[in-house]
Length: 273
Ligand SMILES: [Zn+2]
Image 1 (cartoon, protein in one colour):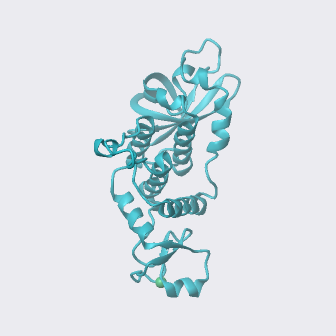
Image 2 (cartoon, rainbow, N blue to C red):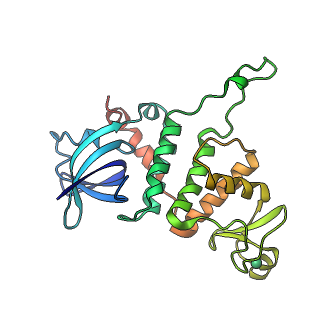
């Protein structure tokens, strides 16, 4: 039995002499770990179409342990990304984060759209608007603050929410009382804010975050993914929240850096040139 779906290649690992297992985030079947038979044989035509981040139309054949990739057609190779190692790093980080957070077969439908959105944003970053570009010489064009970094924070936090780890921002995670004040305490392990009293009672590893950061996070979680203008301090606190929650729930951060370094050597081949 076979099925067709669209998917984004997250990563792969070699098995046996000629095979690979690909981790694919599909639009209709969640994350699929799929077997590609003979893909590392020199004459294999499949391998050029199965590279990390590629958006593909796929046909899978159901298997006992792994479904098998029967056909693949590339929709988008994101050519702009392959020419920019920094953007490539961000995109790889996004893919490895999805791979870390999702279990095979789970059905978090929103994650596919979210990963597609971040790839599109990294591939074609929005241009500054006309009014900003028309500024006089003493009023230079506004740079999009944080650039990809801002998007990556938003991506990580939205991914946590889509996969069921959305942070509690309004009520204390222990006593459920509404939390007020300019500075709050964030407890990544318990997944949200602590009131002053609970913070002092538990003496946990909670860290301070500003109410502006929490308001920004609230906006990020309910809005479509976008480049968001924000003060540096807010961006930094959002990054701390995202990283602390990933560590708290998954015990590690994705090995994207290592991954990027290892693929850099293969870049020309993988860009399909
Ligand atoms: Zn409390």
